[in-house]
Every structure is written in structure tokens, then in C-alpha cells.
Image 1 (cartoon, helix red, strand yellow):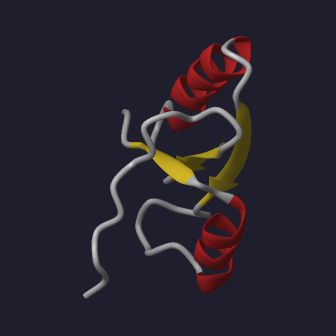
Image 2 (tube, rainbow, N blue to C red):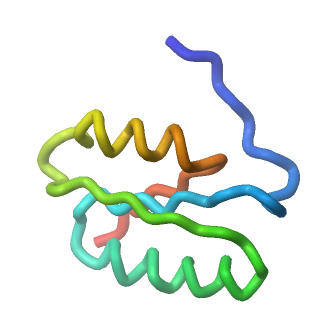
Length: 77
């Protein structure tokens, strides 16, 4: 098991990954959050699972690891 990494004290200069797990209204929630983060001058990126019924493909996980400093996962319905 990996050692837990604590979130940074400040998101300035960091990339916040908005991760859509494919649940209903996840995209709507992430769009709302994206607007708020960008209004604060933060950088965002997006990733999504093709379906909420399966784990994320390795390519999606690798992309998030490479591109993100912090990940916010949408679990909304």
C-alpha cells in the first residue's frame, strides 16, 4: 500500500484534476466546480471513466498521475 500524500497547503501553481466516474450528474457538478476553481485562477484538467460499473482503465489513471497535483472525484447522482 502506498503512503498517503497529504493535500498541499496552497493550490497556486498546481493542477487540480476533476475526475468524472460516470455517475449521473457528475459532469454537471464538475463543470460547476471547474468554474469556481478557474475563477480563483487555478489550473484544472479533466479525466473520466467510461462507465461507473468498472474501475478506471490504466491509461486514465496514468494520465491523472502524470498531469495532476490534486484529484477531486465526483460521486454525485
